[in-house]
Image (cartoon, rainbow, N blue to C red):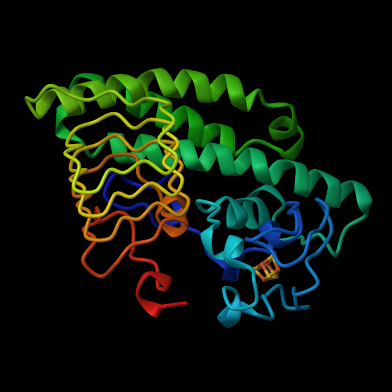
Length: 276
Ligand code: SF4
């Protein structure tokens, strides 16, 4: 059963139903985001036997801010409970582990696409493509229910390209509906850009590099944010009301304040106001 347009609850991480796949399957390198490095398929040393993080409440102060940014869009619980029927990676042989860890990033991509498609179906301006969006949503949901062998062979990048055609059309319809001449910053290099107070209403920021950009007080209402890299971007007092295709990991990676206005689909990260 997939999420309805109004309810994306099964597209949000539920760590209580997951075998900590992100803490095992994914690699990370020692950096400003991770205090240590580890290989893919190796459990993080902070992972406890009950699949919970031993430093969960201190991640940022201990140098694991990268963990607070990550979100699996509900892929972890899908792989743990549906694809592998509740059989965890500790219980299986090396082949079982390998398949589980291979499937997880594929499922994450599919769930991220479900997130966008589900959102697109809530947008009235996208009504001309709602039937196509619904078919694509159902098709993507069916892919997530395949066996681990089928998921392992899936051309997820090809599927992503097909979905993207529809998402692009959705973006055009939504932004055209706002009746303004729209700025196109698709894939733009805006690293460290000074965009304080900028009027970016209805802009396309698809895949734009906004790392450490100053977007303080910027007006981003109705902007297309899909794939924009917001790491360390300053969103203090910015207005993202009605911004489309914004995800929790993007917001988690940015800086902001109690005054940042966000779409209802994402939540204000605790670290924005915790001064950590
Ligand atoms: S520090 Fe905690 S959340 Fe991060 S990978 Fe390790 S166990 Fe998982």
